[in-house]
Figure 1 (tube, helix red, strand yellow):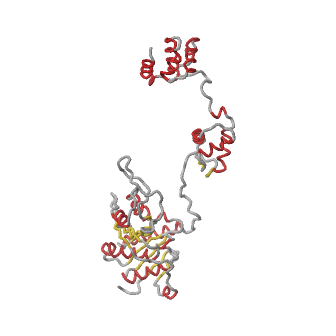
Figure 2 (cartoon, one colour; figure 1 turned 90 degrees about the vertical axis):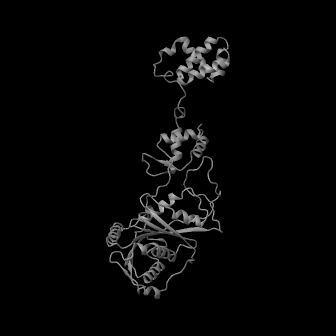
Figure 3 (tube, one colour; figure 1 turned 120 degrees about the vertical axis):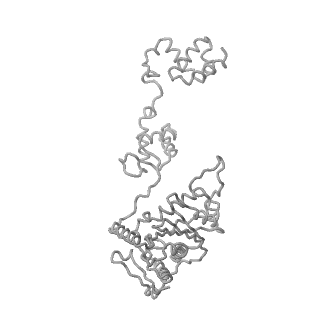
Length: 403
């Protein structure tokens, strides 16, 4: 029998063979071929000479017949586990990993910040014959896994946090029952403008990923985009002004003014009051004098009485605009390079959801220098009334004159 015929026979039966039956089949073929049979079977099948010889010995002494049907080799046969050959391996691995382990020590799922290749190198330096694949297997067995950071710690909790949430919710519901506008405002994270990578993936023909710049550096000629959003809680509508200068209180209130002029006034023709819910920091923070000054000018121009309720410190993720507007914008443009300001405005403006969200967007080329602050005399002219409950977070600004 030539080697090609033997190879065809092996390929025909190999899918159905176990380790045990493959060893015995190879032994039977080698015995049938006679002198040189072991070498020929080895070349045709790739089964090692030692395996074929062991199979022939089993057939000769009948050892294969004494094995239980569910076993493929005698008890104690096969390669020993690495942890059996090297009894100190696990202990040394734990000693290397434990100093860098994060989380609760007795947690059912622990994780380490060291890479498996670095751990393997350190174990090899201690005299262990290990690969990074073995290290990864041992770590999984010990209930380690690769995990990213999780944002769960909000810092010290303010004692009036829950009370402020209840107060803010009650004010929102009251305004909605009276058909007065309620908006949530915030600044979305700044975005690099240009042909740079944008997080996320989108469907494209295989192998035709859109090429972008290798490094995500600021392109001075194109700058950054600063999206400031206004979300109407009652109508599920959003407005986003895309600025190009600085995220200041003047820029923030200008965005609110544009929303009112383009969308809000037509939606609420009988409105006399406006409720704004905002974070406790950034350009619309409660300690920003310029924020309150600009709101006073807005109230004077429109005749609206403006009430602002801030979320407690460290709770910005509860702001409705984050998960009702900004999250949908991020999903809408995922995987798309923000190549120009016009592209950013278009992508934001085309964001919509099946639930009914609609968004309008506009480019704001205005200049908003930093460091601007109203004087004490100007602040004294504000018609600002702090509320009885946490007047630092809740206040109302009334117009000085009708528009």
